[in-house]
Amino acid sequence: MTQDSTRRPPAPRVRRLTLADFRSYAALDCRIEAPLVALFGENGAGKTNILEALSLFSPGRGLRRAELSECARRGGAGGFAASVEIETERATTQLGHGLTMEGERVFRIDRAPAASARAFADRIRVLWLTPAMDGLFAGPAGDRRRFLDRLALGVDADHGARANKLERALRNRNRLLEQGAADRRWLDAAEQEIAALSVAVAAARRETVSRLSALIAEGRDDVSPFPWADIAIEGELEKRLAQEPALAVEEWHRAELAAMRRRDAAAGRTLTGPQASDLAVRHGPKNEAARACSTGEQKALLMGLTLAHARLVAAMTGLAPLVLLDEVAAHFDAKRREALFQELETLGGQIWMTGADPLLFASLQGRAEILRVTPGKVEGP
Image 1: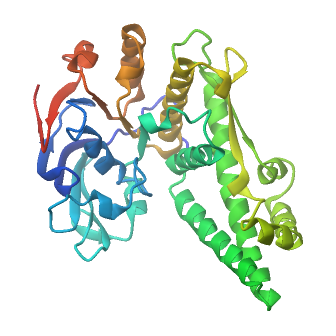
Image 2 (image 1 turned 30 degrees about the vertical axis):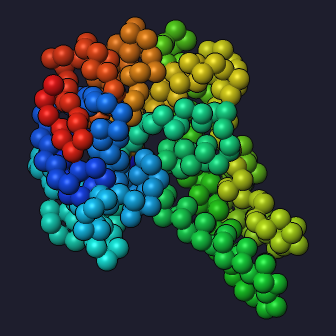
Image 3 (image 1 turned 90 degrees about the horizontal axis):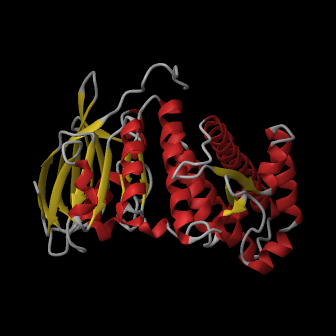
């Protein structure tokens, strides 16, 4: 759903965060007033743990991509709980997620059970940028595919479920090929499912990239400290979807899978499909591949892409997103850091940032809530 550009989308804000036995926190009750939140403290104090707890209000495994059992505090009972009070102009809603001692993941909205984190999407959208993503443009294609899926998930809350189903279907086909399935009907059925899911995943990615590219083009500024990105998907399905109806592409992919069974069996994996696509990114003002840019340029380019994505999420979902930026301020000099803070203030949503040195946030005095994090505690500076 696209919002009227003259009307600012609602900005859900976390007014209270409580944690129990989550990572380094036996218990935490943190109340927040400001739209910008800066957490500072020594390395290992628990700053990223707070962002991770917030990231788990989005479908998936959070910003660390950790197993949920790893989030339970060492020495605790074995599970954990996290809760936020989300305030909008209209109402306050309590959202909760956790892991029971028996290993069951649970979700609640206003204390009533919810099926999954997907149920939170109508109330909050969560985006993040972490130091682990610094090498995104020069790293393996799999990292860029995960990033691409996070972009799509920001605007389409059902994308994660489709992508997960595709992964399971691919594993099933690989197992059938490895076993040399005697009854080809099993493979036929598996490939029919894969073809349908592959086209759905590829179409969602393509739609997101198309809309994000259009938004970037509208606000293009060649002298911005955060350069605009030229982005495109490199993949056979995505290429065909630009030229043919989805049903025709689905049928082509099904036939391709059937024809390549011997090759895929030898490789031990399915070699064609959205699981082999890549996200191509270029530094727009320089017209140069992002992977060939300097480390500083890549970080600024990634930040520019993150800011553009946050605006796209607000425009398409009607909710200004909660944005989590881990150790982001240390990447930039004072001039670019101030430019970043000004950009963040224009997004409309709540921003949570972390940094080791409180001086990184000195210019935010009076503009943000600046909190000191020590092991197990969060308090005023």
